[in-house]
Length: 269
Image 1: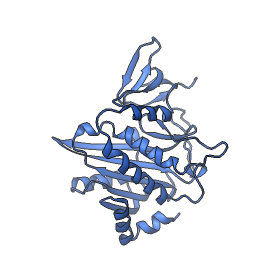
Image 2 (image 1 turned 60 degrees about the vertical axis):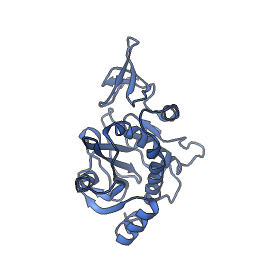
Image 3 (image 1 turned 120 degrees about the horizontal axis):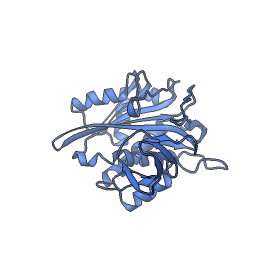
Image 4 (image 1 turned 45 degrees about the vertical axis):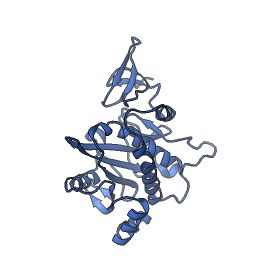
């Protein structure tokens, strides 16, 4: 389904004007690619500048966390990858957390807040965006570092329009679709612009550990808080550390931080 993003994305001059307006180095758009991550990785190795964005109407081999396939109907999702070049690998560790919060704030701008509407976009550690109890999107960060030089590619996928999908495995959140929660006539281009503005405002201002304000915001958006986990550690999720590690309270009352892993919820909670 063609929309403003498709129409402008196919026009080279329009892409250049959007890149200038958004303050980014380059905006590439494709009708179909295997994966925007693959395209952005190739550009990174060819020394493309920071703030290069690759978007597509359709991915034939899109993927999410842990190698899972990202499925979406043509034109139904906002799918893009952003190339960043942090000064060093130490700046990349908290990017998934900070990027997730920035994107959640951008989505919140378009949410309907009437009776029964969602209060805010939530985050399921480490990389899922959630409204209600449904996953509306995901973030995949992949990078490479050599000495003090590093690059990171941030892949973002958001479900906009409804498309047929079903995940019978309860370990995974069922998908949700933004068109059911955002203001009418909001386009993929509107959302992409809001996300770029939010990332521009947030990423240059934060380095090192999460500060108190960031921890408070994450707490307000922490979908996983209070849920009982089977894996990667059995226990109850009780937030994150300043380093972005998941805090899990084990049945014996001790606490164990989780740096990475596949979250499996307790089916019986």
